[in-house]
Length: 324
Image (tube, rainbow, N blue to C red; front, side, top):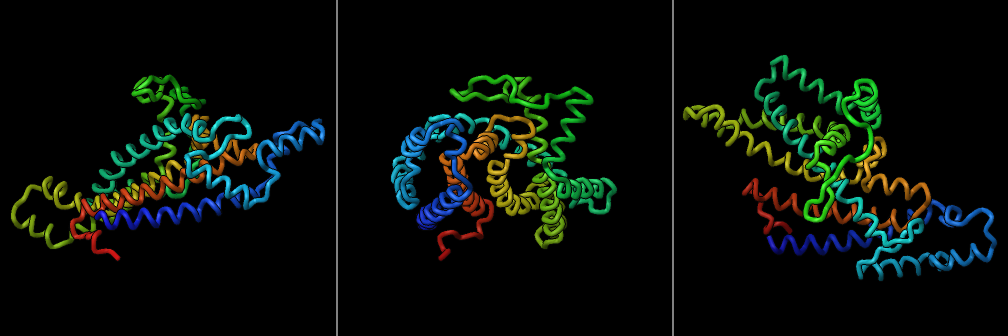
């Protein structure tokens, strides 16, 4: 396994370099940030001074080379808008995004897997068809529309839950978290459901299909013939094999949850990384945009590596050492 991990790390470094170039070029092409940084009444001398201060007067290849050199030292630049290190700005928003992503993942696992198992074990039941109907709705409805509808119903009409913000927070190991307060949980519920709804539908379908495939296998039939209790067959023989593809999907979906939480955080004014990058795009704050996208790339690579390792643990037939 060590050989596999070392090989993947080398591939990851090359991938990060390629993606950094694509991200840097893409962000460079979307516009000139000076138009948003300089006051319309500023003189040409003031404008030129700001251009030189941020190094925007240098050729593109020189800006990229300087960015790589600084990134190797852990410096991803300073925000044009806030004049602070980009990593510091993102680090302030990471806890809120991770908290929301973990809440969505927890909802997906606790609700999606049991419903998918039930639908797979009782495919002809009316309740199973209802579960499939809800999952089909989850695939079809846009995230932004669902978020707006939940705000209209549960916040505006019924007044049960707050529509924006993170609520009260407390310090946990020096990190502000909201899930330890009742007000924070109420603020988290709607955005977590909105973020988890599509993934919940996906896991239900995946668990149902895996369950229907596993229950027809020979070892499950043999376990029934031995007289094992139904709960033991489900939780030991069926669930363990169903979890193998689900683990892979959940790992990738967790990365997408963090990367694409932009819509949910914008609708519910959740102070996470997604809202920060949207605000940065509006003012063409290049360092923040580039740093955010590169961190997302690194996160996806790390999650894929962890998923591969977990896959081998859940399925001993997977021999990572033998891969070439």
